[in-house]
Image: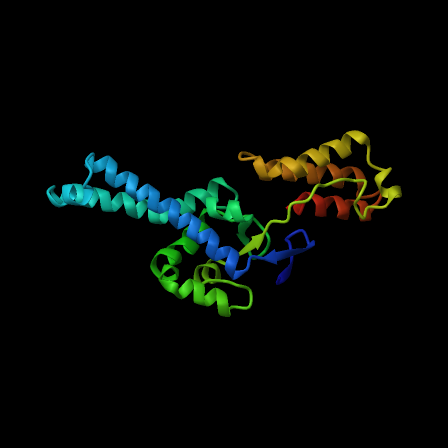
Length: 231
């Protein structure tokens, strides 16, 4: 399993496990299956009969154009909507515990999702993406290269002060309330949909202000937990 180490904007080194070819192909297959179900539902909804293709052929070009437009929106919009609402995941990636992030370790924004999925629709869907994943050192398809993104494996683990590398002396400097606050944030931050970055900055400011002059090593450790946390 290949790994990649990046330095975040906070000057913290974080190691990620890159998603392999097999897991990415299976995740894509699941996503395409879901899209296929949506296509069939649209055809059946528009037709309302057993033979939607025959129904469409008997209708005006306007109806056909509307159906094609809806299918195009699903083809392109499914991935964008999923990644923006599920923190870089699609339903297929969620099942396989995969996640798309930027190459600097930060979450994707709408711009990166639009770019990578535009190349998915017009280039990578035609086997080019799979071929690039096979031959690229970091398993990147063309959309990932252009959008500066990568797909990683999420490694679920429970965060705890008792089994971490933080020494007992440093642990004793943090109050029980602060331990509870930090633990809750790390476990729940992925489910936060609104104000995530603001909350993160407030957490960092609090611990930096209180402990930076007391123990810089403790501050660096706390920054790493807040920025990296449980994957």
